[in-house]
Image 1 (cartoon, one colour):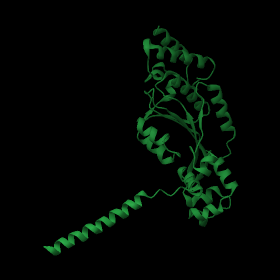
Image 2 (cartoon, one colour; image 1 turned 90 degrees about the vertical axis):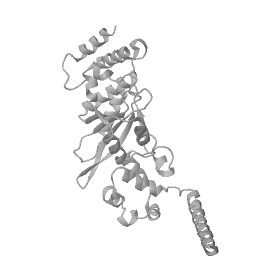
Image 3 (cartoon, one colour; image 1 turned 45 degrees about the vertical axis):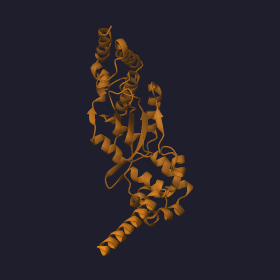
Image 4 (cartoon, one colour; image 1 turned 90 degrees about the horizontal axis):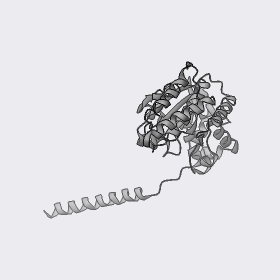
Length: 296
């Protein structure tokens, strides 16, 4: 009986030592990410494995340089950093110091002329030999006035093993359940069609949308793939053709103010040439005018 008690005590002491060890390990502050670590993460977020960086990026880097962050840190130059930021559209402050978001978030809220100029500049500056088209994906919660949405423009910048590699431009689109945001986004949809890109809308679960597109400092290909898989497709080009499609999920507000205002703004933008659909018939504007008249 006495021996059994000693064994129990020894076991408890050993367990206590292990728990103390776990606690000390847990309470250690995480090792800060290095500039080299962010450099690698930037490439891998866009689908370029660290071992593929020398082949895709070049700049004198070799496979042996990218196997260890400490070795890579000694190899990186100002040109490496500047050209990596230019390639991926990343912010230098984030890469060097780990502060803020990796990418600029553009805003053209109710400014279709400015967005058209942005798209013209983007297309004119393309230097990639890739024949892939631009891809426009509007991620949002389409019936919410509280959840922000983002238009992600995927621009081909090269190929690896017959797979297209993209850089991403993030454009704030506002809460799509609000009439101003809905019509402003419709004008961006029209520009996507002007530039003959692939277009889709994804109606996302709000928490997942926020977690993957807003809470992270660097959004990855895997994040956007997950959002696409776990969301529902919306034919957003119908916003340029059908009043009911434009208004679906829009908060009507008091006395249908939101609905009437959305139609009035749509007609104003259309008159300025910002809501043209390449396959629209001549009666589209009349449909929207009649929809407005029907609502007094």
